[in-house]
Every structure is written in C-alpha cells, then in structure tokens.
Amino acid sequence: MRYLLLSVLLIFTLAANAEMYRWVDEHGKVHFSDKPVNDGAKAYKPKPLLVVPADSGAGSGLQPLNRPATQQVKYEGLKVTSPANDQVFTPDKSASVAVAIQVKPGLQTGQGHKVALYLNGQLYSMGNELNFTLNNLHRGTYTVNAAILDQRGKKLKSSESISFHVQKHHL
Image (cartoon, rainbow, N blue to C red; front, side, top):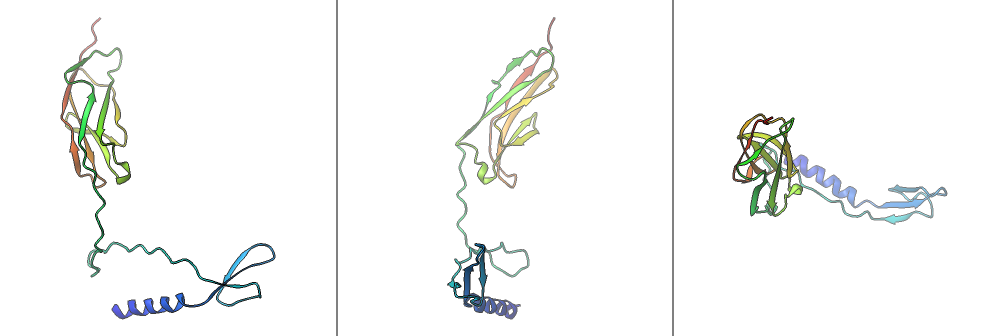
C-alpha cells in the first residue's frame, strides 16, 4: 500500500514539473498543451491547487489531522418570550397560539445550529425560525420549551418550560 502511494505521488510530482504552454487562437479561444503548437504559445505555470485532506475513515490506518476546532459559540440565553407563563387563551374558532423564542447571541445557523420547539415534552418543530404557530389546540393546559441543537442533534442550550392554557369559548 505504501509503495503504491509513493508511486502515485512520484508520478504526480513528475507531471507537475512538466512544461505547459498557453495560446489563444484566431477565434479568441484559449488552448493549453504540453508542447508549443505555434509561435504565440507561451510557457504557463498554473496556480497551486488547493488541497483539502479527506477525513480518515475507520480502519484506513490514517491518523486524523490536528486541526483547530471550530470555536463553538456559547449561548448566554434561550427563552420563550411568548406566550407568557400561565397565559390563558380563549380562541374563537381554531385554537392557535403564537410562540416566540429569544436566543442570545443569535442562532448560529452557519454552524448548523437549529431551534427545536417542544410541546408537552414532545418535539413539535425544528428549524432556523424563532417564531412558531401552534394550531388546532384543544382545551387544556400545555407546556412549551425550546432547545438549541448542533448539527449532530446534541442539545447546546435549553429554555425553561412555560405553561399556558386554552379554554373553551363561552357563548
């Protein structure tokens, strides 16, 4: 395996040292070759390639690179701001409750973080939004809380649960 890898690297090294030529034809089309085709061909040296090492797979025998870890943001606050704790709703036709979440500092979606909303302890919705609408709620008491999850689903921060009540509309 090592000899194969060494041979491949040697071939690429030799190919990288080969001369390249660039020229433009009468139609304005750019050409590249390893031999000068006409007098207008000029020696060309391409820019170095960006090499991104692959992650080592299990059983590959390769050691992982020592890369600095992406700095993980520390969330200072996560709070359900609406509805208020013990708020009572008396819906007209369909029971809808707006839920608003506050995150400090802002949600780091670039790092793959998401907000999970839990209704009565069960996952209700997950995404990048901080506002949710709970629809078709029946009469009763509900609890709601939120959590910030990383790209792997690990909880980074959880909010306190708040309770709210949906009452039957009186005529």
